[in-house]
Image (cartoon, rainbow, N blue to C red; front, side, top):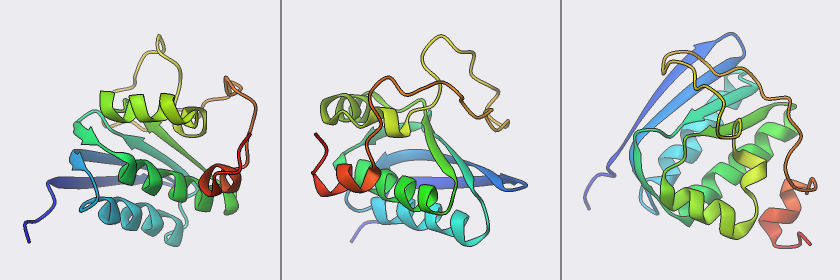
Length: 141
């Protein structure tokens, strides 16, 4: 079995982490993503920013990993935000209507340098809030 084509870099700053993913996120590599994000919670991180700039592909397996991590992070009193998702993930987020749960600041905001952790967003989501559990179980209406 070939190794997943994904690299993960984590940079912590207090109770905040910047996770930079590079490569492809699919069924084979989604478990790596899920594990990396779970380790953040285990280590006391409560604000997780995920930079997807170097990601070339992400399917619904990756979305599921991000939604699960966002739910667990929210349950722990934290937040998880995706920044610069690749077009494939952007389409999936738009199609499923759950992008507001995971996306960082809207387009037009200046992105921080790659090594800096983005400031938390205080803007209201563009859609009505839906509990993550409802989205994951398919009960969101």
